[in-house]
Length: 317
Image 1 (cartoon, one colour):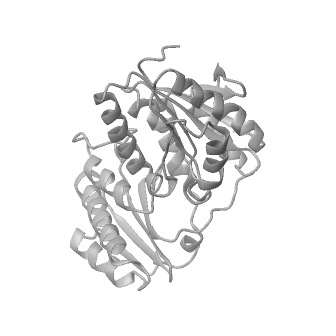
Image 2 (tube, rainbow, N blue to C red):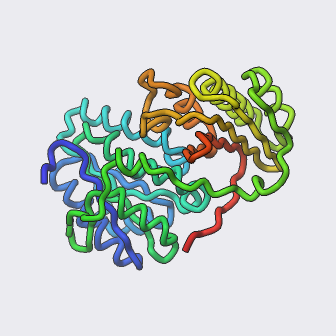
Image 3 (cartoon, one colour):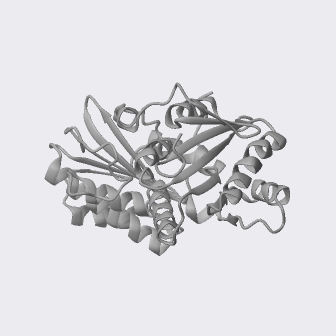
């Protein structure tokens, strides 16, 4: 294993606090011994467990998960900026022990599954070793199945590090269409349905439908994202284009569907646009929306955008 360049992306499935610490502590201490920048990104309760298990003088940086993991594309951007700065400062190796917050898993896992796959490409230019922690007591089976397909390595207590034979290359993982489970509000009648809307009409419809509780900045972000996606569909998709809007007192959901195949870039939205078809609009949407879902099927391509407080999705096992 090459520890000085390239991304080493491992997962740990743990069943107790003791098992979590048995993986985290040796991993982090190994980074400190090697003189590597060593970081922890865990939710507060588990971050405190790890902090207490390390020497009080250990120069480990603890990152807050809330803002960092608000959106997958923003997390990729933030981590890339962080690691670029560390490398520019002379780091020959970087270690991160982290987790995706449970709230993100419960409301937007498909989005984060794409993230866990895409980072194998997005971080590969950095000398990074990371371990992603998943508590099997609270993590649904379908999530653990995706974890097994998106992590090239498995970490075990005491410093164990093994090749994961179930790993799937990002290009293959991201190319497989994922089912788009309807959000509960989508089972109701849409507030508005527009056929081949111009971006200006789409913007007016979102503004009219949004609940008063949606913060002004969040509404502005959703209006921008929907405008970009509608423009993408009209320019690069295949007609007809259909836009639907649902809203209640706490959130708004919008779908934009056309009959074309969608973007051919499997990393669309998660990585900065490189002028591929549809790249810029999807990149903007991934930066500002509470959730973005991309779906291909025999009828065409659908983008679902959401803003506001998202409901917990039904667990699939």
